Length: 147
View 1 (cartoon, rainbow, N blue to C red):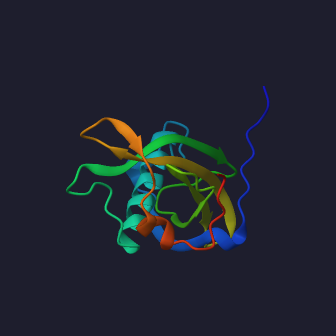
View 2: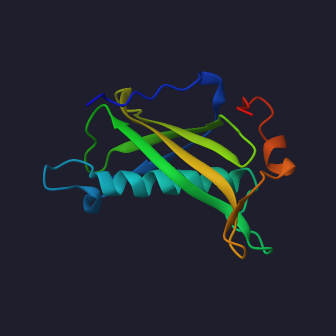
């Protein structure tokens, strides 16, 4: 089976946040577990959206829904490691795009993981994808468009 490779343009990262690996994030092999990494990526995504004034769900029932997540691991992380999550966006289309993540350990400069989370705007009341609001795309003028 072919290995997944994730590489993202440097100029698309527009936010960063640090998270600490908790003891409860450690799996049986004594390193950060996949399930905990997914939770940390979700937290970094939520912080990113909040920083840019984007609500995950508006009063009108429209929100952002995750469509896929791909993660490649490059190194282990352990309890109490501080991890830097650099977050960006790319590949906008009519309905959504990708949120990208580069996760490093600043203490030694190690690349721990790369991730991409696809998203679309979704009307939860009508249960269907809706076009990306202009106000959202206007926050990220440098992002490439696929349509």
